[in-house]
Image 1 (cartoon, one colour):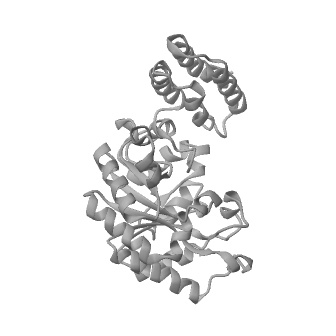
Image 2 (cartoon, rainbow, N blue to C red; image 1 turned 45 degrees about the vertical axis):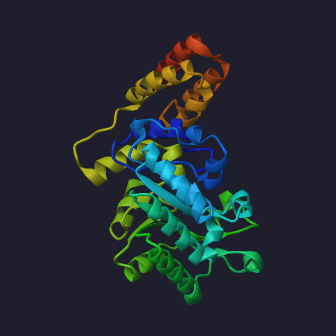
Image 3 (tube, rainbow, N blue to C red; image 1 turned 90 degrees about the vertical axis):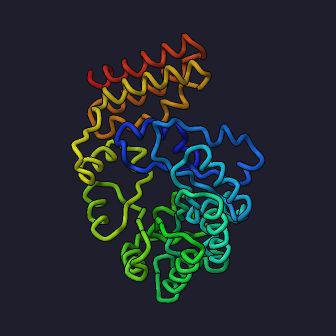
Length: 330
């Protein structure tokens, strides 16, 4: 999730499960080639296991970015073929890549040749583009499935064995990113059929999964499940999922324990020059659904904005986080 799952967000989410695979926000291969690569790839070892999600359409650039990700210590390289935003579409990557399966296969092959870690693909069940945008977004016929089947088979021949499928079509242009998550209907049946067609592939599912029960139902047939905004806005669901799926005896710390962990982290990061709000903005869902959650969000947001920089601010942000727990409980 671009501009959301940065390294501070991922460190926070790791507190809810030591085993769930986390993904970076999408980083373009061009930015890796021409920007501050070290800054873009920076992460804490505590975030692992961690996948680097890349955007792009040029095999050589993607291969170089994948190699840099492996060298930096990432556990997986993921190519985004599912994002429908206008900014990504204008760059000819994201969901529009589903219209050019051989190009995606070439990109996957180049990345696989460059790294030893897994190369995976995030995708949709289909796309509507150009003149097709006026078509019925709720429809999914045999021609749609043939295109999805052809894309999957072609990319698999390029060396991808692991696909995460958002069970909606993507509409390129005409719908906002939010509408693209809500207007095209979820079609889990399509992903189930795709998995039956490709039993040799690992096929996971994404889209509309909000509860442990929904995720467990999907895990009855899918290789895995991916949660996005629900995990961001209600991170405790990750701890609930860990307990139910892995059954390894691990229990996530309670909210106060999470705040104490983040207070230590924030103190170190703010002392190193990070703005406090860059960390606390990801924590507003910690008490989601609990009494006092609104007071907690307000105190955290206002308090972080009021902090300065340096050693004094570092001590203040730690006090802010620990004090916010008391405010929520009041």
